[in-house]
Image (tube, rainbow, N blue to C red; front, side):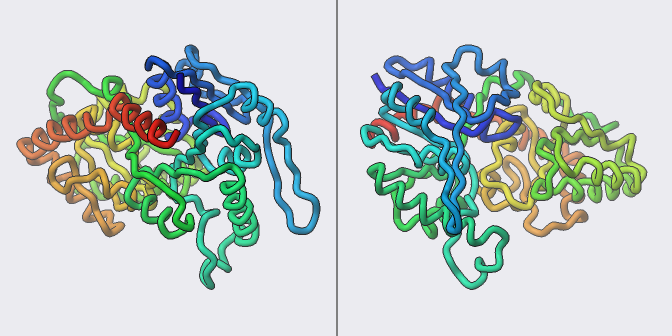
Length: 375
């Protein structure tokens, strides 16, 4: 028997949270696995995915300080770990990382899933000195790396070549492995050829409405499509602090009929199935799980370069990556795809085959192999 704890701060809507639940739902199907998920918040936007999982809410937090006494609320988490007696502890997202490593448990192998380039790990340089929260990040990094030694080491999981390079530069040669994220392929796959509706092109984007997701750029693209008399619809799925700003820009460009804000939805796949193209505007993307989901649904991709998503785009085969934030270049690729049916269907078919490589079943096979090699 292999006893595994997965720790994540909460289960709010998000790519990391969804991935953890997909991993856990696949892990519990495997023989010889006993699994527990620990969260620090009772928020759960994925109750439909946690029904068959051992999910436990544990109040835990820390606050480090150089000036006054640091605060540690970890007794309940320590008790939970001691009681479960895990062989593996796998943390997800930075809060889970620093809180869990404040506990002591030597009879386990600790893994850190690097869902992004954790800014707290930045190396000390003259340029980083002027970053916001520099001193807090510096203190926390020093603390974390001491804790790694106390607990007998740590193994990082990089989700893309970009995060792999970042970890290599910042983690002082601690071991890490590259393991690309994955999806439940069957959830997103549609078993029929996707027809291209030339009368009205349906475009879709999925992501939190925050600065790095850059949906304001897509409003510029929409404006250019309208100028060129292309009949289209853009669905923006997600919520966030930029909703009001996006709404204002939509109105400013008179695009209220063409660009629709759908908010958070549970059935993302149904929106993908009704769409023709997936458009992605993030300026930074640690990996780009939603791109794989869209490919599984048969959607060609047009995306900006977000660094981590470079691992996913085979130029002209499953989509196109635009390396300059140019609405004109981005729009040109959309028009090229919708005016060339042969190209569209070739890319759609290849995208589906490409996405199969990222199925959660294969991912969990690799993850268990990594776990067992370190026990």
